[in-house]
Structures are given as structure tokens and as C-alpha cells.
Image 1: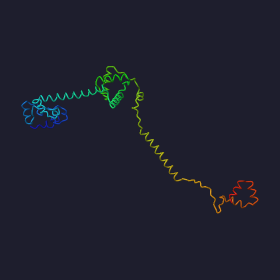
Image 2 (image 1 turned 90 degrees about the horizontal axis):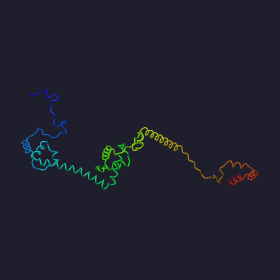
Image 3 (image 1 turned 60 degrees about the vertical axis):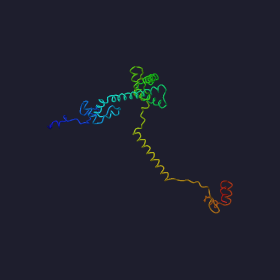
Length: 275
């Protein structure tokens, strides 16, 4: 019988199969628990065979029903897949540890040394309470070496710092005011030019460029060129340039000219130039 209340009430509706509320939940059979015979019939219909070797990748891709079937009819291979995955995971972790131990024992390349320096500097910057001293550095290095921590990673320094702080083996940096801390960490200084100052500088540059361009245009429009030409005498025969001097000589008598030449050598030289 159709029940309108059940069909319309928001608390009575069925949860969709792909609802977000079921995301991440373990796979379960869509028809609940199944008996051995039901699983056997399901395997026959789908062509599942046993015994056969399977991998974790295959298990991850299986439906919930097939997982139940594999656990029931292919139990040894199913268990072996998880064991192989555990061994592989352990080996991956061990390889990382062995590689770290090799680095501490045999040394590292220049590139790895630089990475370790950068990681240590980043750690010290993030933890200003850590005193950058030789004793602290030696304690940190010893701890990371003994615990197979990679010195090129910041998290290795953080882990060592927290553990050593709990053991009381590290000395703290002296307390600093905000201004003192800023002075001792130049990498935190803000060297950017503020927009207001940048606008002022641009305005000054534009003004200077405008006046320079105006001055250049004015000089170009009112240019005056002075040319020094050599002294030349004009006329045939050439006559002195000063017409008044020639007229003056013509108005003088011979005795006056002779007397003036005797008294004034410059007059005589100018008179000789008239010849």
C-alpha cells in the first residue's frame, strides 16, 4: 500500500547508493551477508576461479562481493597478497633508512650539503627560540644521525628539536624584543617600495623629463651661431675697412700728416696700410 507520509517525509526516504554520507566506508555486499553456497553461485556466474595468485592492486579494484568470495575460496592467495604488500612497504621504509645511514657514514655530495644547510636555516628561522650555537648544532646532528633522520629535510630538524627540548638537552636563545629580533633577521626586512613613494618618484621623473624636453626645444628654436671670419680688405685696390679713417686723412694737409706720423706710430702704421 502506498504510504504518502513515508514517500514524502525527509527522514523516511532511502539513502542514495552514491550518497556522500557513505563515502570512504568499507565495501560491503549490496545484499547483506552471504552464505558459502550463495558466494559459490556468485563466483560461478562471474567466472571467479581458485586457487590463483592475486595482487593488492587487484584486491583494491574488486567489488565487495568478490572480496568476500576471495576470502572464502581463495584464502591463501588473499592472505599472501597482504603479506607481500606489508613486506614491500617495510622494504621501502628500510631502503630510506639504509640510504640515510649511508649518507651519515660515507658523507654526502656538495648538492646534498647545500640542501642540508638550507633545511637547517629554515628550521632555525621557524624556531627563533633555538639558539644557533655550536653545542646545540652538535647535539642536533648527533640525534639525527642516531635516529636515521635525513638532514636535508626540515621535518628532521623539527623532530630532533622537539625530542631534545623534552630531554632538556638544548639551550634557548636569549629573549629579544621585536625590534632586536627584526635587526638580527635581515631576511625579514621589507625592502619593497611603497606605492606612495613610487608615485612620487614617477611624478618627479616626469616633471624633470618635461622641463628637459622644453629647454631643448627652446634652445633649438632660438639658436645663434657666432662665426669668426679672417680680416679682409675690400675694394680695388683694397682699402681699410674704416671709411672714416680714410676721409680723415684726405682732409689733412701734408704737414699735418707728417707731424701726426712723427707723434703717433699707430697712426703711421694705419696710414701705411692705406697704400
